[in-house]
Length: 144
Image 1 (spheres, helix red, strand yellow):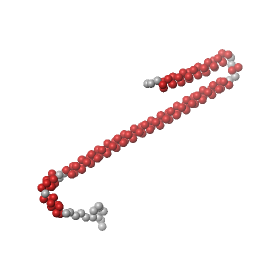
Image 2 (spheres, one colour):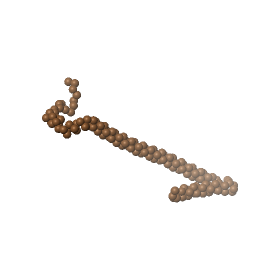
Image 3 (cartoon, one colour):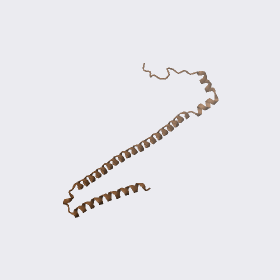
Image 4 (cartoon, helix red, strand yellow):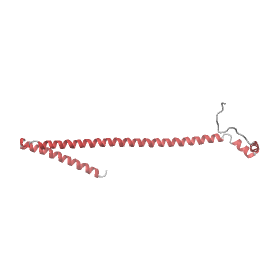
């Protein structure tokens, strides 16, 4: 029938109450003074609600951005940490392979001077690695 469904089918007024309200001087004063107050009040409430909602959403967005930045930083730091660990592990494996290779060399075919040169090289490498480890351990123990 073309009518929209609403909350009410029909509205009825108690006309005696309307007449009493119109006859009452206090109510007449209120109606006369409050002509635009309702709309202004609703607009003010709507503005407060919108301002509060905007503030909450802005704070939530900022916190979300911070959490995303921290998550991204943790992922990158973890990836670089794993990369560093694998490179160091690979370097130590290569050093041990080189030491095993040199240990298997028939040193009898080398001259005494060549043997001392090879031993001196590896002793220097071990001393340098130990010094680097001591320096790293010391730097982590000293407060910055």
